[in-house]
Amino acid sequence: MIRVAFDRPERGEPGEYGGYDTSFAEMRTCRAEVIYMRGSEAVEAARLQGRAVFKVKIRKMGSAADINSDWRMRTVGTGLPDGNGPDDDLPGARYNVREVDALSDKKWVYLIVESALL
Image 1 (cartoon, rainbow, N blue to C red):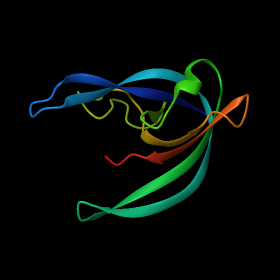
Image 2: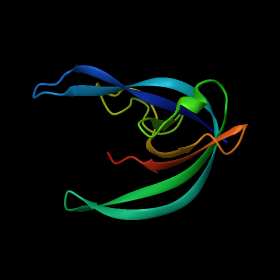
Image 3: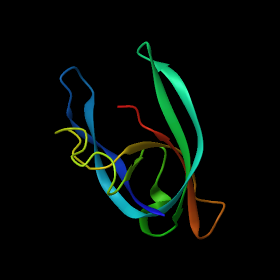
Image 4: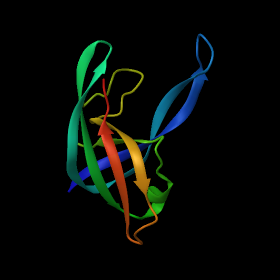
């Protein structure tokens, strides 16, 4: 079991070229069971980038049922201590939430997360 945090995207200031900047706000911190599922490589910007996919199980309490595929998961206590710079200063390694199953079990929420590319 490790400690993880879930961040919800929030609409920020208007961007320089239209649209809006996106920032993340921490909404939930909890313990999670993380199971490695698979790894793969993808070509991004003419380079191979490694990705890892994990199954995550968290207790269904509070805002756990609100998590959806727009959110991200971070490790707490491991990873980047100062975040990704001034625009994203929350600590920990980032993972994109791909799938959420909050219906099949009364006590648990199951997620599929993928390592985020930096």
